[in-house]
Image (cartoon, rainbow, N blue to C red; front, side, top):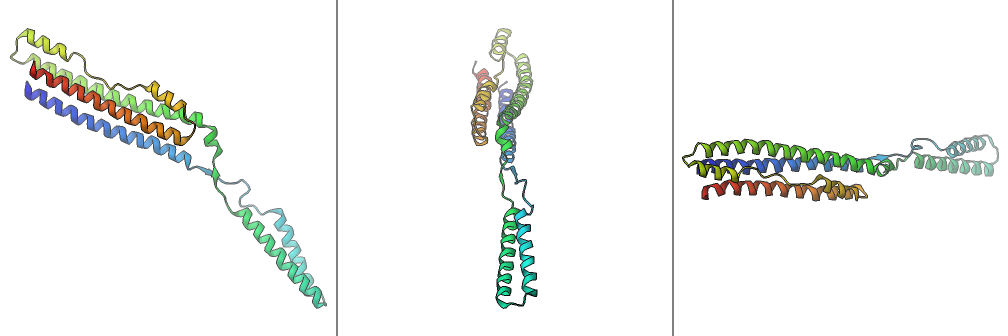
Length: 225
């Protein structure tokens, strides 16, 4: 009986560690998806277009250059060449500034913060469901094992009934999704959602620990009765 209790306690401890690892990975993925939202940028819709003023300046530069070639007066030629160079340079600078892509935050992300919060709550709800369901299914099997060990022991029927009553219900992972929903609803930015995700992750990990410790203690207590 003691050996069986020890084996089951060991398996519960291993299950706790696996569940915590899965939970950590799930939250890393959830937080990473928020990071991708935050990194989205859009470019100015006019990027890559040549400014109309550039065309005008290039045109003036061309006319001035032609005038400089065909004029017979040196002074006018110098002025025309200078104007041509100045206009060409001005057109180039305006065009360069127009073509330079300047990233800016995607306003759609901030506008859709409500949708992002709903999506986050949905993801976390899925994580909690999978975690608690996996724990409950595992513990149902352990309950059957320990009940079988009690039934096949050499103890008298009264003692068997007493031990069985001590473990009639298994410990559950006590975590509230409504609390998380309230936390997220108060968030005002993506970084705020990330911070609350991290807090809730710690709470869920602590709940897994707590359930496993209580269950192990409950089974170990059978050996002292």
